[in-house]
Image (tube, rainbow over all chains, first blue to last red):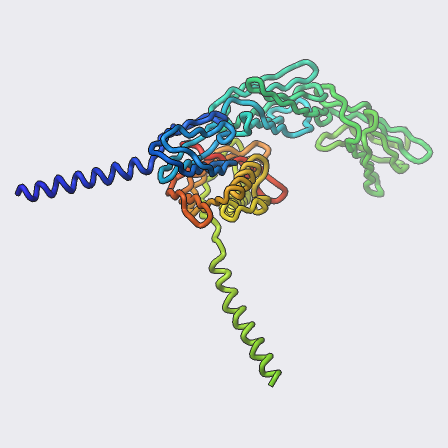
Length: 286
Length: 174
């Protein structure tokens, strides 16, 4: 009985001794996380020299260190966020470097050209980084400002996983809009060109000339009063007994005009995109 | 006699090639296993074709990274990495080469969730839970080896006809 108990104690002590040896041999004492760009002091035991290995994102270090002293990992060696492994002799440990405060923003603003007075048409996506270009994963307030003709629309969103986004309406007036994303001292500006939307209405007149019928629109605006940009296509159509004649013309200096073939009697219509203008019953110039 | 000899040599070469080719196929590194879930991505829904492209390109990126870190060849990163991810991996490889180190990653699979897909469709953020065995090698000696479950925050950007990894950051937890 005593012999069995002695063997049990011996086995237990031996197991504990083995476990403690393994535990102490495998672990260096390091914190679980370290802020990017901070140095780290790693205590060591024993005497003599050993080789230190440090690997992490952007880092692969091998150097001799003195055991029994604290080993310094420099701020340069711990700039990049991610998983690091440090090994000294037979001991090793893993830890994480985490991003610091926001220092820069990558800002995607789309599209670069939008129609005025359109809801949710401008999108901005901001990615936030620290000074070492690590994605800042802690939630941060990101402010989105859209300014056109001294009128500003603002929205603040909390970042999640290093990213925040906003969708904004375009303003009623055309012009270059300054779209700014900012967080702390970091800020990025993009320009979104706001242009007139579809024409609100199209009105044309027709008059005879020596080549046939000259059709011409009044100045074309969108529903907010912005002139529709030059180059926009306007289609004139004349339908008579011989069939249909269609002419595409571009808006130039705010109006569009075209020459239609002479006709004794025709119905003339005008359209641009989905917007249809007035119709003229042409009776040989009367 | 010479003709017979030449024919015999030719036969040997052809037999050798035939025997060798299948081995090349067998020994080629397989793509890492990627299980991608896009159900919770937003604000834009991930299109079917995009889902397939992301899974394909992200697997290719890991394969390229594993080979690049093992062989210390930064030229393998180019097609799959860009921006800071490319810069940091290139810096790692440069330092490994100087120190005579290399890393071997035994890839045991990735559970990936798309958590953000930008409204205009040019950027995507993934959360990747990767099962890996990490080996730090000094020449031919294994200095450190550990089986680990690592969590990565990944930022992908759309390139001309593929997705490239712009950010690859391991984090303690999501």
